Image (tube, rainbow, N blue to C red; front, side, top):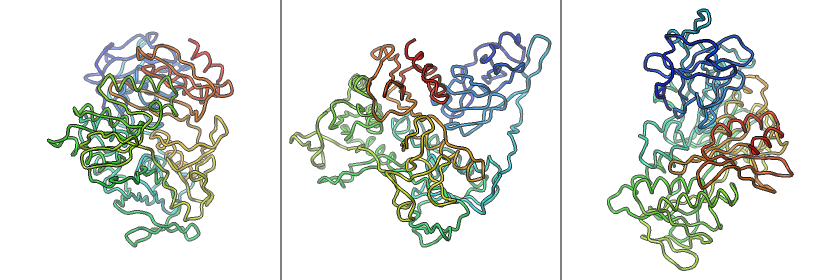
Length: 520
């Protein structure tokens, strides 16, 4: 994803700049040739480093992000990079930044040539005979890549029910569905990447059973795989309605690339003009925005009084509803579907909404059946310890299915979001090779509605009070969710720096700092 294509602004760094022009604990944007580059000066260090200025995830402008110690954080989706080497430290960053030589000439620093990537060579503390990963989504892909980065040289097998190599799932309801991103942008890695990394992809096959005593997994094609370590990253399945007509071919759920492709085909058919979205979930509303971008009339049906109120509260719920209504979406709130007809959705009050296609986005369920059959401990998810290991030694779980003890609150959490899943996959991989690293990442997700991003850090399943700083109507606000007097989560609209600050403050457990952030 992305590339080093930020606008070329600031000084020509090959001509040099004064050392003092680079703020201590900060960054300076410039360029080298036709590439944007940032100078990085960690606090308390008499050194300056130079790395690419564009996030390798979605091309976010890193100079507008933050520098925390040696770590650069992207303002858009909180990807983390090492400011000294460009190494991708934490998802959604998977690809490193380019880095450049820097020469000190008296009071000036001059940037030279781009370095060949020489990232740290690591050797695993432990090396299981083989690693099998069940799931080719966010957690599974991130884990496979991290195993290789951690120096694991043994066999890695990824098993996925979908027939395509790993994709950037958030894109399926956003840019790709809207028609503003090509299909080759959807895949996380090029076609030859996995072979180049000696990662075996077994696609279109389901894992049907796990024998934890024999360390063997059975597959739907009749074959089996032995493992030294196993990662379960089976993700979630969309909830399907059991109403009359729900199996009609023009009624879709949205989870896989094939799902998104089918919706695009239906939306771009000559006869398509009207779409109904069932559910005001993130997936449902992102699909609504994407279908509006394709010119369809869109109606959203949901039982609640406001979209996303249970997750984001009434203030942001009203804001999101207004944003969609500005773009022509019509809401039917307090209503449920009763049946699906060839050309309409029948609601529970008997009214009919004409529909050439219908997208059902009423939530997902964690895919824990494999873990249950294997005898692993489950409770509304697969129970894992701080290192993401399940009740069976050598078996780990990450992503949508994992319920882990949260380092910030002490509560057990299970969160269905992309960045959390990727970071858990990375942590599980490190622990498979013996790093002994507890999962401490602060939960983060983003949602995009038209040109408006919403970033959310922390986790608040419930709250006592919501505080809004700024102006939601002006699309410039911070929303804080308090529980028992403490801030449990913060959502922002076009306040990327504050979102990064909030993540760092949550990570440090700095409640006073969070209060001060909201009070600004």
